[in-house]
Length: 422
Ligand code: GDP
Ligand code: IMO
Ligand code: MG
Image (cartoon, rainbow, N blue to C red):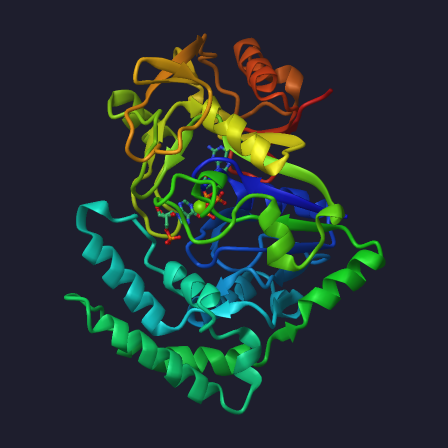
């Protein structure tokens, strides 16, 4: 069976830290979508690492790490990441496998991303500008380049054809980023990529399953950024929900076991788009400060607000979450009261459903209030040591979401994770 772990909000829920913890129980960690727009933070013996393309099991010597077919890879970013990781983990490259089917981000994809965002003006998505949208567009438009193509004799030709297509499109934009300077590093990185373990991952993963290997699929971004079910058009360009793991790895739905869904104890979003529970006041600023809410990939300040249970119920439903994980609970230590949105008021009507036109309609969240715990919980080692009012908050989340909490994260460290007894 393959277990899946994903973010239930707008990304940055703490997936990197949790995968790094859970990796102790798995043989293989596999990324199934997204690309270098992701920034997954984990700490290796106190050293902070941010992973963009490499799965978060890389710092466990017993784990094989697969970059699946659903991922889009920027060879330049991947090379940089491999160098950084290899300094801390000598055998990293030996345990890194890449699907031949994964698509490549080429320099002009990044230029297209930037040009498209600039042309949108105020309506911009707030993309990370890593070329994600244009690369997935070429994939579905049947123009893309795949990792396996780098091993063919006419790769350069294929590259030139795609580049030319992009240059024709770029002529229609007023502002075009300097992409030429990325071309030489791109081809250098391609040469280095040829030395990596490039495999036909579809058959490989089946073999691993037959051998009884334990596999964890690591999601990127968050469910509310899913291209199909998120706050469209303010989304990313891949399927971030659990179903994405089947497509992004080539495994059947019947092979999916547990689905871990991660949510912060509050909520953040980076980039533009609707965020019903966003706080534009001092409390929002306090959340940003207490949670160090600045993007791991772009450094942008993250927008902050209370947990949104309407949105969470929707994303728990979409992915069939079997185990909830609450992260950054310690960030709320000093807040009183703590709030959770339990319904929306739209055009004076109360609803518990996400509206289709969430990007254009006015939403007033209706909140339930909870007593703050006003105690430090980062030292807690087990559930019994957690403050009583936090326990009540968890009980409420479980009953509203009709899903059990499996773990509570109370700090950035690998060992700061509490198992919730049932
Ligand atoms: P990801 O994209 O989901 O992997 O999350 P990011 O790495 O972008 O952002 C999560 C941030 O929160 C990182 O800086 C983590 O080190 C940090 N973090 C994760 N879990 C906790 C927690 O329980 N408490 C605190 N205070 N920080 C956490
Ligand atoms: P991790 O895996 C948070 C957001 C961007 C933007 C939108 C589209 O670290 O949780 P894109 O670059 O995909 O075209 O940007 O999606 N976004 C993320 N926000 N965490 C991420 O990844 C994100 N990846 C993309 O900010 O609003
Ligand atoms: Mg992140």
